[in-house]
Length: 257
Image (cartoon, rainbow, N blue to C red; front, side):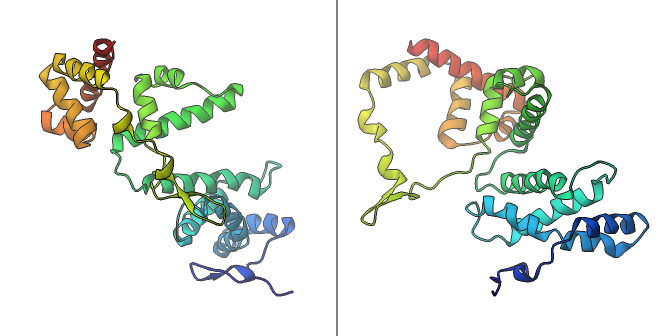
């Protein structure tokens, strides 16, 4: 039976050889003894592992070539750090590293422009989530992570949310063979549903804010600037902007009530 041929980064996936356990062990021995070709052979013999993981992310990008290269980078890192003294298969050890590299690539290449400080906080929060799950088997809450990192719960939630991949309003969500239903068909018209009394209360609440608080909220939620950009314009730190923004939102809630 002919094998299906797929070209990724110039590699014919139908002709990829898979190493046996004995071949893998021998190549690690050769690599340890200074054989420069052994590392390449280990990588080439485990490319199908990378390809199997790519299937999970096939709907994230239109071209898998970049993801394949990133996955291969994770594989090479796994090979370089693999300890043969443990009774663990290379594939078992390599899978999380390959997935981690791909997820990092997708986050760093999001279609939305996210400030570096917010991304860094998100990565720290996610790493801490994984560590806490590993230690006691329970997923930590955003409040616990915020306390551990010395930031507010709002900052943690905002940072993690920023890593979510945006979805087009014209994304098809259902098709029964007739008319396609798109995401925007399921979004309610908030303008028509907006309560006039609530709008008046919100306008009154905004007028009670300090001029600087109103300006920061306008920059953030109307103009769409990042906290770092606003901090640069106002000559204060991003942490101060975050605190002012949070306090302004809390005040709005009090005034609206």
